[in-house]
Length: 403
Image 1 (cartoon, rainbow, N blue to C red):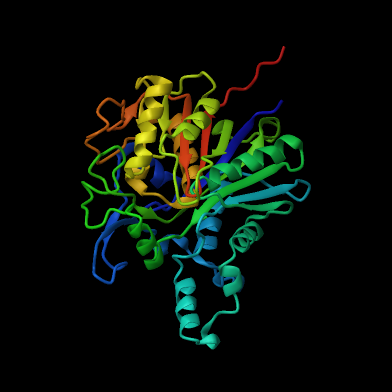
Image 2: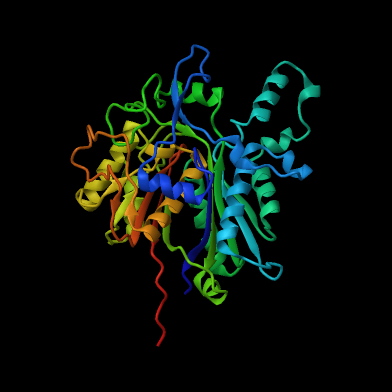
């Protein structure tokens, strides 16, 4: 049976315009987060990850100009992924597009302006496109149009696990032969006053904390996570097809497992049993070189990672979290973790969890600085609002020997 391999990747993340910059940040432990006070009427501060508008390089195409921020981010990341994949004419191939989206356009300026005008009964100021701006699948469809999707186009929305589960769906289509190429991504633009008040009310944002204290994975003083915007895209193919066309192969998606906590909608399974179950099934009795963790600075989540480290690996396997550098871009984070894992495999290093002092997590094997060594296998953990858990296993690609 064919292996599922990645032949291209692209990214837009805080202070990160492309794969080259992302690799630099990962290898050097760059903090791409910042403190803002404009989300609270009382000038309370929080920590966020913002993308510079200049990195989007808008087209002169009239249709492109009307697209919301999420679509622009997804298209930009997708174009970079397709450039790496070097895919030529796809007229005779079935190209599927799968995107994970959690909260969509709530951080988009036009979206916010439309809500204000609606509240003030200024119906003439509501853009005709607003129905689509508020529809997740319209985001995916617009991305698909500009990236050359010509067959199935799907949107997966399972919170922060959305883009990992988008990969899971794409693999089903590739293995069945229903499509030949999968363009798989995740995108979200969540930073807004509505999101700030919502998450601060549930006490999962680092209000008035410094960058040394707040949004720090694996640190007991952290009172929450950093909201961030971002987009990540990979091109996924069967290895037989990729080899036939002479493509560069950046790694293999060996396994993705997902489940749900099965608890009340506003709750989280604090035991972490389902998250650990997903990781155990994805790892399948192997020992990864490290775990690319979903830890984000919320204590209940990070303690589950600590429990997984003890139960599955007795704290011998290094854990790290790239969210210490770029924050949590909601539905995009899973696929960005995949991309960071592929970069570490191809460049032989473990990215660090920066800013942490390990307080409360002293017994864990946490990579606090970049570790340069051969990397062949990486496990990924991911959890989302609504109780979904997802875990992936990423490997260096090895061509099967034929006799």
